[in-house]
Length: 457
Image (cartoon, rainbow, N blue to C red; front, side, top):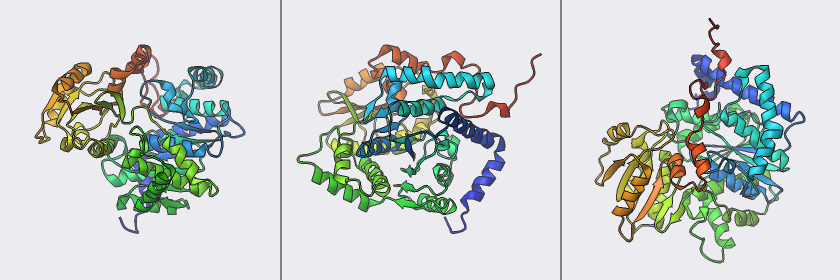
């Protein structure tokens, strides 16, 4: 990366080359802004911080929520959920109630969407936009003062970027969603840096120099202050944790993991910069209490689940397992879903695995035979099995397991949901999302009036 890198120009050319796609995406952002203005004409009362990145977004949002609770009522909008839709909306560290979700849907969001449909059915929102409106309505209903908002995919074209925010944060830039963000690291970095607003500070814990240089160029272009987090900030966080603890961290605490301490250090930097008066010790005490459904979760003796689903998250999981279970054999049951590369996802697990069992996923799962063909390129000195039915895969893993071994379920949120969801009704709803309109559902996140329908014959 050199000083001649012009982020605005490269983004302009990219948008021109893909005008039908990029304008449709930007149109969605404009529609969401209009919805927010219609529902909250005086402006939404909750002050927001947007978090983007390949991994660590959800944890960073939860750490921010914990720290913001020192200042008032705090919330977080997260995604995806694991078992229950309401997991996406946290207030003061707790998922909102079923009744609260139903109430804001019936009284605020659904009436607005019906009004949009009557005006122009092609302006109907995407699932992500509905979730954002639900979050804003819940924050308003619960009188939330501050909230962290997780970006869905990328940054520049994600609908969360339509919202007014007081700060943005970027955890890192990795390989996830290359089919949408670009195959090259600088392309993905430029897209994620699209969360930067004019004059609004950006905080980032990205460690690679090319990403940092792109962020610096974008922030200069937008006159946005840039705050970078490096090892000294993590070391300072460790000192604060040590001062706050009278004994060792409990094993289920997020802050036992090195990558989570980077997320916490990023969050602490945001809080201390925006609120110089905040008490870091109080923030740390609240962060120590943060828990996250599906993050290194012990589901039975010797069996763990983690919703890591991209190479960066799986590499972090492998590092955590090495740290915590160095003497244990590790048997992975891995689902591969969406358009992710099976090779890229499995590669971080191979060096630490005793065995890997790749299994099918009911929703958005990849064809197992195609995954098998792709994975054959990995030269692994361990057994790699392919078992279509996930429960059978777990049974085989248990049969392979010796006394000191552990089993880890990972790779796909949908696989963990179908194995472990305690609510069979939600399990069915989650696994069949979108079935009612699958034949004619528009492409998620595009404005369909850009591509008009042919006239009726």
